[in-house]
Image (cartoon, rainbow over all chains, first blue to last red; front, side, top):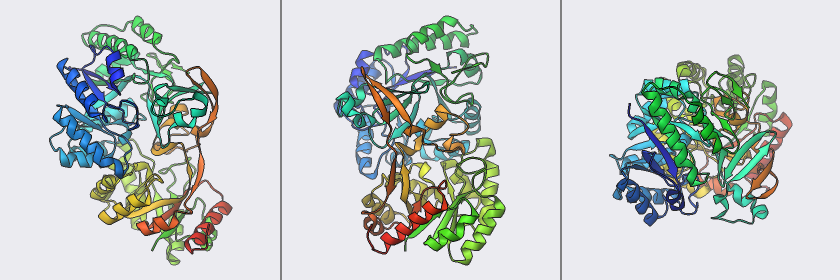
Length: 305
Length: 264
């Protein structure tokens, strides 16, 4: 089975700071705020450079698009997709149905991936989306792994799973970084470059301006055997809210683990121990096991806060 | 002519809400709608609601906006079919696939796409019109100018909020509740929004620390009311199935006051 491990690169600073070698593919751009400084989907020359750089290294490159566009945003999204197509993009990620409709009409042969904020919960949605040129979906992160498996099998669609990193759990209308600008002294566009940590009663969240993230890192390293047996092969690792140096190392661990386990090897405890070094607030594994997203279910089924 | 839709969670509220001036009511079907399992009306109660409302020429919209597991969608479609057969004026749904199935399998249904569908732009509206919905509920993020464009280019009924609690995280773009407390707060799976986002949090950013509350504001269309009317809005919704009768009556009265041009 051929696997793909991908990640999101929001800007050139992140691209230049990371080791891309273990990844197969990259989503470029920051879909949660159009004003994000250096947003690769908004700055033509940075987009061109990053696509060309990554493709020269033999990587697949997907453009991600703004997740919550109003009518006034649509023309510039289409312009951005048009540029990316000219630069040789392999696919476009879409979170909004209006953007999907426009891209399907304007670029009928372009491969479309539907992102997690498109709110895909059922196989019926995925089957409908085939009519719009969609070739891959990321079901809403709220779904259990058995539901995702069912959706994939019933629809025959390629499905992407989040394997590691912070889980995007909400997009706000206003920018939290600006709400607290008095405390931080930072204004747009630099304010959201520094992730804010929110804590309450043992809960922890991260914020990057308009994006709310899990405070803990999603971690599926202990469950790769189950993931492999279920036949999943496309994985995302999130690290865009972290130091870029972190993400290449995380990907290398997962690649080694996936390849070893696919060839009949056994789980090694040091993989998780190594990953733990990069985590500031511990692990969770989201909604895959039907629990609160912030909890961690280990390979024995024990639940950890 | 535009209408105002008020929430009704208890049949005992109905006369009071209609007397205050609501043109129609909406509620959830117990077990298939957002909120705790015990909330919403049962099928028998919806039957009575329909008789009483239709006798007075009032609309009834029923929300089945909890998105089931893929393996349970047939049961949801059966419920939609039953409600449509009873004469419900519109069914409010929350996911593309469910909308698509309902339109196909329940041909005489009038389906509205809930605010949870995240419709924000003209092409979103066209996408849902292509799916076969008759109406859409828009977020307050969509301004009258953009609503005008939607009305001009589609034949959709457009519903906006007249009154709502405006949370920090966008409608249809939030899984914070189940991230923190699964079971009670799975908003799109039938749970209850307890505005967990608006709790008090300690914040830390690059060495700066403090305490904050994420914004949660009451939202009411007042000054912009005329602009929404001119844009062609068909329905104004009062959010708040959790509110008591006094609060709902008060908001309906304010709506009437403003809509009759008597100021804010």
